[in-house]
Image (cartoon, rainbow, N blue to C red):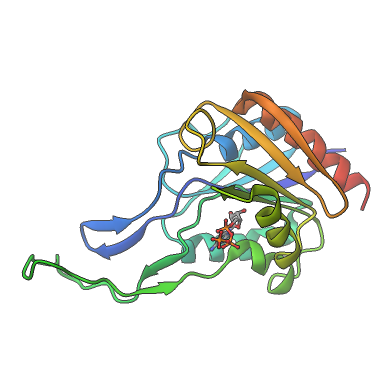
Amino acid sequence: MPKHFLITAGPTREAIDPVRYISNHSSGKMGYAIAGAAAHEGHRVTLISGPTTLDVPHGVDFLPVETAQEMYEATERYIKKADIAVFAAAVADYRPIAVPDQKIKKSSDTMTIELVKNPDILASARSQFGFNGTLIGFAAETENVIENARGKLERKQCDLIVANDVSRKDIGFNTADNELNLVFPKKVSSLEKASKTSLAMELVNIALELNQGE
Ligand code: CTP
């Protein structure tokens, strides 16, 4: 039976002034690959994405956003209809506290930008949005990959955290390949290094199995 996937992907962009922003190196490839794989298998897919250069996969409902706040609001609106939610976005943890209307001019040799925490969209899925479906998060780690992922799994009440080691140059951010650690509440496994497209197909199947078990 076709399921409804909600997927967040890509980076978010947080304005500093009208011409500058804070962001990160997320390409969006992993999230788009999952969206494409799920749609290809005949599932309904809502893809909520920050700015990327990728083509929107065929057959996907696409909701482009810029900021973490916009991604939060779009997710809150659409997650209720989903069976499976996959949070692959690299959401900026903080945003500038105030954004001036005019471009900031250079003056002193140093400058400080005060930041305020963005809402945690994944952590809000169960606690704020009341989502009861299968909840999958990602963790980009540079050390203690499994332990950190387990902490996120518990804190954000997920069924699975897909963790990758971003300290490695050959996989992860902005590369075609990835190698993934899968941290479930009661077990840990891994997916060998492969293209993001083939890993995406495996993740869609794992998500469907988790959803069957609920
Ligand atoms: N995430 C989110 N909203 C945020 C931050 C993160 O939805 N504001 C989601 C990401 O899409 C990803 C997971 O949470 O699925 C990983 O987030 P991460 O920032 O690595 O976790 P934190 O608990 O914030 O831990 P850290 O201290 O490592 O930043």
